[in-house]
Amino acid sequence: MDTVLQARWPEIMEHFDKSIRSSRFYTFATTTPEGEPHMAPYASLILNDDCTGYYSDVFPDKTSRNLKANPNICISAVRMGFGLWFKALLKGSFPCWPCIRLYGTVGPSRKAEPGEIDRWRRHMKPYRWTKGYKLLWADIRTVRDIRFQRFEPIQLGQMPIASNGRP
Ligand SMILES: Cc1cc2nc3c(=O)[nH]c(=O)nc-3n(C[C@H](O)[C@H](O)[C@H](O)COP(=O)(O)O)c2cc1C
Image 1 (tube, rainbow, N blue to C red):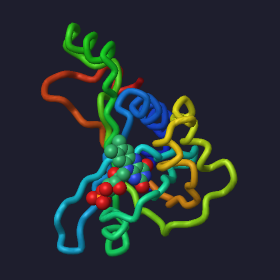
Image 2: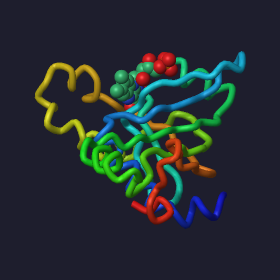
Image 3: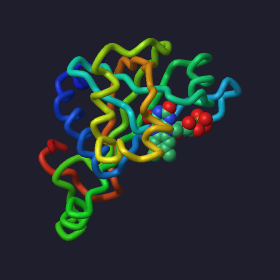
């Protein structure tokens, strides 16, 4: 594993937490068995303290089929807060990373441990009385682990990222 990833993991976790609050989803990129790129939105990713994470594979989908043939994944997380972008545009620099990519390897679907699903379901708590919540998230039982190997901040043209990208 990349030592830079390990050193900066706490900041990466903070970035992912802030980006799910502002963007509502992450983008998962995989490769089809034919070698075509494939992207899909996922909201359930949770990062652990040790450069790993997991997400709920609620629906059988193309992403899961792709991962069977090639377990490599690239995940991007964008911070979309209006305040952050407005201030960055005014100053001509970002106070933190606007977007980063994480590269990793996805494990097989497994039964979730007690509490694992609740860690990400807390974002949906305000909606738990809705019909949609019951249809989508009330009965989730499985997750897939991801082991991350490296990360890349995404630069936006000439806009510098202050303090070496520290949030
Ligand atoms: C905003 C958003 C968040 C989503 N989050 C998840 C998720 O966390 N887990 C999941 O299994 N599906 C999630 N989905 C559904 C998948 O993106 C969906 O099943 C999609 O069809 C997968 O694409 P694919 O079949 O092309 O791989 C989400 C969809 C949207 C629009």
